[in-house]
Image 1: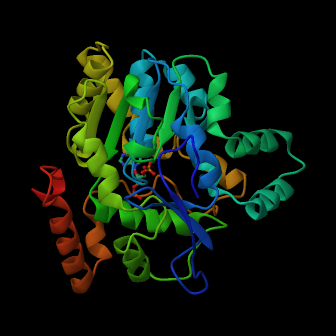
Image 2: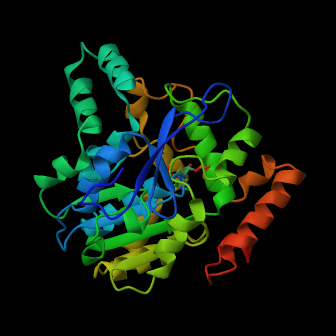
Length: 335
Ligand code: A3P
């Protein structure tokens, strides 16, 4: 499939779903790297790519489960002069538009969700927000607009670097374990396979948003661009105050030690987990997520070791080595 307003080929691919680690019966592979998305992405790709950019726009970008939510709240507060009142009262999902999220849902899921929530006006409003193309929402959003995405740079709005982008990367082994848990927390997505089978489908680049390394490397290549800030989850875990200072500098904001300490406390794992503005409990209320699962889950580095057997560890070593060969990208957890 080609589109005159879009520079990449979008290939539609049928997947075998029963008994496999694939959730989507049809996916698309986009561009020369073959980035994977649910089929509906084909309707959104060109609108996203050609979206109008304002220089005040703020993007937070990542491969899923790399600490996006954590980074989003940190960035929002830093840009918004530490306005805790609004941060605690306006859900992150309203403070940020999630660029490609709506294309994750096919009509069957949408109808089920509307049906389950049809008697609750507030929930119906939330769902409309989720299912509406973010590009439409953003047209009327006042500046500065905050935008979340998991798209690699090449598929983001082509002028995105005229605005500011904060990219966060995480050791892929931890991100993939976390992604497996997230998919199994979602009512319409859960996989009936073990982690090992899921891991294989990440290795062969058939899960949405893969290939993982291309996503990260595209951002890494632009890390010295004045409008790009590249962060690691592991650095946030190790020394959050210094990351907060880097983010503040990037946005031209000055905060004193006391203000930074308060922000780090607000962003601490324990406070974050119970903060209903960021913990996605809304997804449970809408029936998208199982009540006994948590979006803010463990918040550790190196937890992957409990999931990878010897064979998988060797596969991961090889995968990482091959993918880091042509770049100076190095993860703090692999030094
Ligand atoms: P785990 O599943 O390993 O716990 P994303 O927001 O990109 O989906 O990333 C989610 C991951 O970030 C989850 O990882 C989540 O627990 C972790 N996370 C979220 N908030 C955090 C915080 N304040 N401190 C540390 N980790 C956090």
